[in-house]
Length: 457
Image (tube, rainbow, N blue to C red; front, side, top):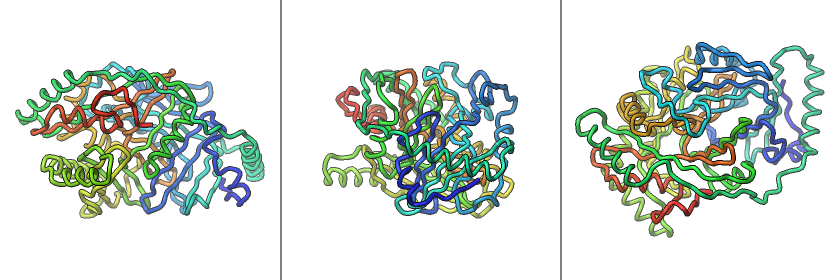
């Protein structure tokens, strides 16, 4: 059931992402059709997760193992495009499909080591959603999903009103940014990283691959409220794909610059990012970095290769001749780095379910390499641990057939009073190993003189 909120209700709930913190998810994404959309989810109903131990569906105290996770999830997200066509999201599931989720479909041996300790795929089903749209989020609808189908419309309407009244009386977060991050350490060091870069370059020279994206992961101590940390990230990265999802035993928080894929009214969108320079400290330094990036043949060749890879992925699920490069190799500046960005669209085949689109496009070439499967095999050998959510997609899958997943980069996992984050660099034939090491540091805001100065917050 849907109810549009009145003006006085919207004012009470304007900062709803700061209250009612139990099992809550917040997404604030640029819409493929323009503007921004915010989705806030409450009241967990069920969840599905996939890890090396198998796939499990959990509802309350009930937990059962699922034999075919891909088909099970498709069945749980039956598409009904006639319901509330004006909304980008009509209920469904919010979560992430991690980098390693694609190992279910490809001949790739996934590393057993999982130091972060989260699933490869984890989506939540809630009963209550607030969907904000319009200028300054002036429009808001409250959706309540009666999964059991046992309540009358009158009972549902009464319950929804009671829920909103209860939320509006909660105390809001202090806004004092009460968190502390310290003791950050990498899972590698510069010497080992450079050695691995050289090993991958040897594979490239031998014709095994054209590119592989090598990453490193940092872990530090986290004390405080993930909500405060999310609020700080939002302030510093306002135009990104913003998300905070509370999975109960852990949180993921991030502000990604890149869309993995989105489906909007039958059109699929992807915007690969490849090519990086560190931001300067002045406007002149920024301009010099931009000029350097535009003139860098290695970075441009890498970008073209990854755009072609994204087109190939979309070509598996789109109508012939519908693929279109809307933007190509444009400069975009973010807080710490400058990137080359493109955008590709295509008309989705009618028979394609959003989960099939995820299967076709995960992981992005910008976090794996080319050819994709062989690059992923070599990455697994080199990194020797599961990437978890990193390099996958985080966002929503809607019962209306819409889908929007941000690429899971510039993202943190907060679990057991620790924070984990990861960044990679694309290794190609003429890569300079030291530069690739520093690129990973720049992407998360570290300075070149050491990783103790953690500025990405």
